[in-house]
Length: 83
Length: 141
Length: 98
Image (tube, rainbow over the protein chains, first blue to last red):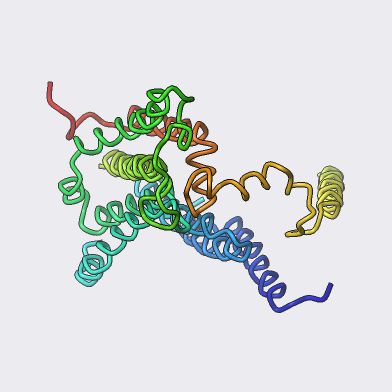
């Protein structure tokens, strides 16, 4: 089966997913790691959209980018930011 | 976070985010989205307001009594919608079996009980997020 | 601890090999004759519009066919909020004064 342009676009998205996941592990500042998690969620929402499931894309965008990042940012007001 | 530009930009954007969340909740039966995602968006608009303008103004906008009320009665509303089926002599949470008018597919009021249940779930999720946020912000002090 | 690290590396490579071979056995993505497309999915695709009246099939499944699931999901949300409020609420400010 020949590869189409969509396959290469998916490959780029999945590579960004792996890169952001690894970056979250290696970044020492936890607030920066949470912001990178926001980038991960954006990419994941695009992947869901590629898989023809806009429901999950909307939920991922709202929960992953908005809720998780804001909640973590609130938590860092009380606890240490460094690992 | 008491920036002038941030406040003015938020005042421009946040109403539209709120209305978009309501839109996603109400159009759950028609377009992609649904009550969970819409509830999160509605809750996030309040959370962003409280983050930018300060927790006191956020609490003035959404008092604790309202939060407690929606928190408690959202789930009960779901159960009441299920009781419609029991009242008609069919299983719990039945929709078409209970004889509810399904409406024209594609319009806002289609789907029988689905938009009503979705409204309850959306309010429920929004109040959950706002309650969690306010509790965490309070605990900091 | 050189030897221990080598053992761990070998174990990790073994687990990765097993995982990759398992993924390679999976059917290709999006084919209509995959095992996941069984009679349950067919029933939903055929009957969702006439049985629930909702265009969005995901909402039809979540709020009609699987309404019990969603109901207990909201109860889980309620319990989680209750636990957080009980644990973190300081008591000063807010709430009715007794």
